[in-house]
Structure formats: C-alpha cells, structure tokens
Length: 68
Image 1 (tube, rainbow, N blue to C red):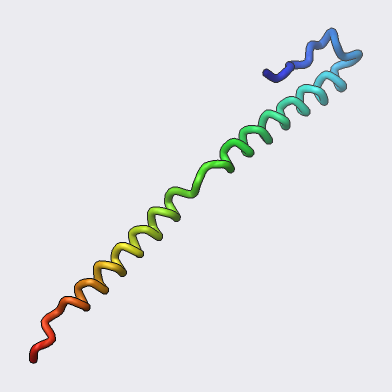
Image 2: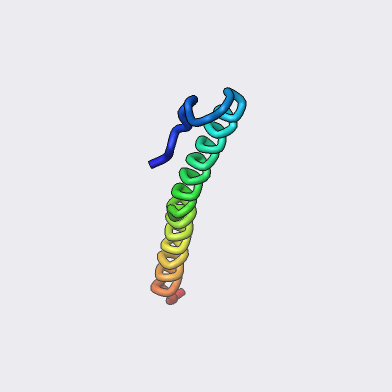
C-alpha cells in the first residue's frame, strides 16, 4: 500500500506536494513495470498465423498432382 503524505507530516505545502509527487511517480513506475511483464500476444499470434499459412502452403505444394 502506498503512503499518502499527510499535510501534518510535512513542514510546508511545497514539501507536501513534492512528497505527493514522489508517491505518484512510484505508483506509476510500478504500474508500468507490471504492464511490461505481459507477453506481446499480437506479435505472437501474427507469427503463428504466418507460420501456419506457410506450413499449409508447403503441404499443398508437396501433395499436388505431379502427373502432366
């Protein structure tokens, strides 16, 4: 849990605002780090789709009728 600076804890409003900004920046950094751990599903699915199409094309080419 993040600690929100209390105005009573800080001697003046400038230090309180600086402490609040620091807490906000730390929370934003944690959110970005959490989001960065996810896999790039779009890129993976695109690669799987292209790979599947290549395998299907190779199978169709290999099993075509060769008698002319």
